[in-house]
Image 1 (cartoon, rainbow, N blue to C red):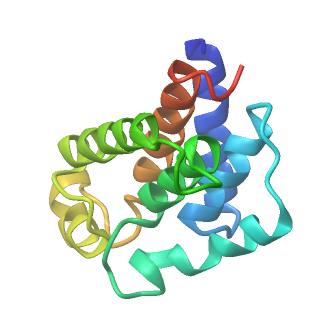
Image 2 (tube, one colour):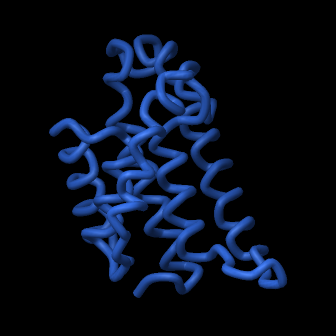
Length: 148
């Protein structure tokens, strides 16, 4: 996956977020539009509750949760005897990279620190988590052979 492709996907994800989609929805939609993967309407609806760290609870960042969900749809299993080791490795890398970038995977921690870290108010840093999450999800999906 080229830098140009990643930049295009990141720009689209941020644009979707700024247009009113939640962070998780923006990641899923941009992933679909920038890969050979198509998501069902049910999967798209499923992203709606991850807004503001699971419906406002402030837990896991929605952009990260959306990216993990995307990877899981690609590397997950349909039967209990199928291996998910490749998925677990990719998802852990995504999580660990995200934590390294934002010092937390928790929405309330990131947004509380956004004024200090980014010099902007609460939720105004979300475009940065959306951009990071779509980039890493696409990179990891490509590296694992889940997309072309």
